[in-house]
Image (cartoon, rainbow, N blue to C red):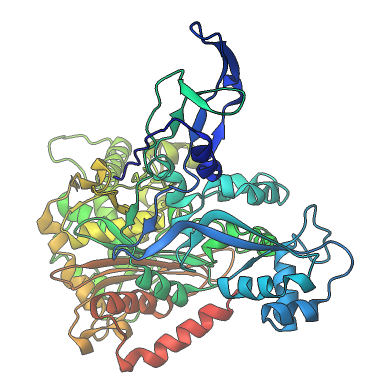
Amino acid sequence: MRTVFMKWGKSLLALLAGLAACSSPDPQTNVPTQDPTTGEVYTQRRVVVNDSLYRGRVLDRYDSVLIATRPQFLLQLPRRPPLDTLALGKLLGWDSTTVRRRIAEALPYPGARPSSPVQLRLTKSEVKRVRRDSADWPTLKLTRRYQRVYTTAAGASVLGYKSTEAQAFFRQAKSYRRGRFYRLRNGGVEAYYNGLLTGRHGYLHPLLDAKGKQHGTWAKDTTFQQGQDLHLTLDVKLQAYAEKLLGNRKGYLVALDPRTGEILAYVSAPVFDPSTITAPDRAGVRAELLEHENMPLLNRPAMLANPPGSVFKLVNAAVALQLGAISPTTAFRCDQTLVSCVHHHPKPNSLTVGLKYSCNPYFYQVMQNLINRMPDSLAVVDTVATRHANLAEWRRYVRSFGLDSVLGVDFPREAPGFLPTPAYYDKARRTRNWTYRSIYSLSIGQGEINLTGLQMANMTAIIANRGWYYPPHLVRGIGQGGPLPRFTEKRRTLIDSVHFAALVPGMVAVMQRGGTADASSLADIGITVAGKTGTVENDEGDDHAAFVGFAPANNPKIAVAVYLENAGFGATAAAPCAVMVMEKYLRGSIAPKRKRWEKRIQHRAKYDY
């Protein structure tokens, strides 16, 4: 923590001039007071030293500066007469297309007459050109102001914005689909840690005579405290790479270090430049973001909860193992009269084989054993009450994964997801006599189950750790200290580690020959991935694609969850994105074998808006 100590001399005039950009007088303190000794009348002043120049920076996990308060140069264009865009382009070194595009982006909609003059952000080299030829452009006005400046085009949903600099966005957003704005609002770490970034105001209390000369103080001065830097868990290079893979598609990717809960990459797609929200010349771009049907401003991993699909079979299997409903060697027939199975595969004669081929009938019967378990101690069994009790017990174990509740990540807003209760089904089915057949969709992660992207990634980290986790978080250091205390508290599930270990062979088999994601194996570079694919049925369009996994399988350093809306099969759409993020993080580059694959995915991500 850096503290600015200020010593005051006899004269305050020079000091006030130096603080003009970062202080403001309190009008309520302009009170005349008389010195009882000399009879001189002085004025009480209170000067607030604030954070406009001293707000903390935001850095990534390797100390690359992502956000800092820096001078920003703005070129104000004249309203009338009509602007010679060709000449303006020549002045700035832009072609005519760039000039028209930049002005269009600054307007709230095409052809709009702005309520205030259009301002364009300039680089230092462009400022030099304007100053050099300022005599030829008397109608242009060049100003400088201090503002939060983003050094990266990635991580918009994580970085967020300073609310005082986003007022134009707030006003603009309220005019687009009123009410939706409040659901989309996401100030990121800038909003969540605002108090720590801002620091503490200082206050000066000078007594001034009529000439502005100081004669002591009328109250004790207080020290201004510098805002603290935030050191994020984010790897900005990995973040930028992951954003290229998802681009303009709808969905999310969350990657975290399972050993610490630190979020390495956090993508909410479609992606956009974080400076868009606060930039004075991006009103037109903001309008597109607000109006677009894919809702790019929605923070999907934290706020959007969806059925997880077949990846949830991992959780159901762990609970079933814990409660004795199955063992690792339990076999079931692939009976498609129970539920359809899209994969043609050998008989699932163990849990490993069931996971490898993601056999729906196998996991239908796993959940059936859980819900229909009957106690041995009673001669007469109330089957209805037993099903209710078994579902409640299942839910209690599943909730220990951090589901159906907020994980407490350092975001302004987070959705809890949903797990159904017995009472929910009593109401939904309009009877207490519902049977397993009416709720079997739980067995394949469909129906009423809803998980967020953060929960999906955390669920994966729990399996990687064999039963425990640290809450996912975005900030690993505040100033010279560590993260918030709650992110260093290890949490455990209600399931023994041996049962999580029993899942791993099946997850490894998923990535091997014949497994549902064998095409995404990283065995060629010596990395064993443990994964699980999911294809989520969607009644309103194409199915959603899901994948969760971690690597290396026996010493996990990264856990990834990917969800792509309307993308089809998890094996072909989501799994490739996940494993390439793993490879990029663990090796720093993509092997030549997957370069064509990588290029194809990035090309699709660029044009799928």
